[in-house]
Image (cartoon, rainbow, N blue to C red):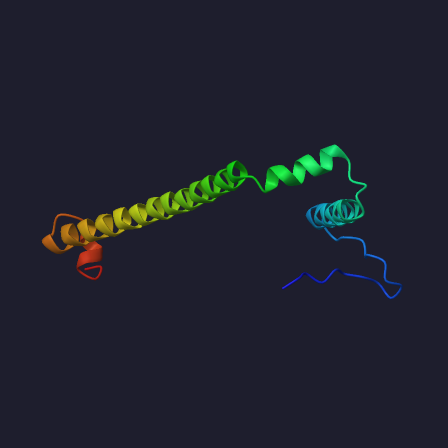
Length: 114
């Protein structure tokens, strides 16, 4: 599904609210212009070369590698978070065992303050 561009009542693009949105607007305009130039046969050699490179197998492979690296970083992050949680659970369990065995905790706390 194509993105709907934010336009005002006169059909002009509305100013972006964030720098990222503004950058995306500029990229969209540049791609639209490049497409127009390619269709009309007026595109510069740099524009043509840019889009030829995007379609190359090397570029596609590099994108795939970057995507896999992103997935690997996400998996490592989740694994570290999981390991931290397991460590906390083990620590809580060990503290509970010490308390129940009488080797830990405040004496007054164990006997209701008596």
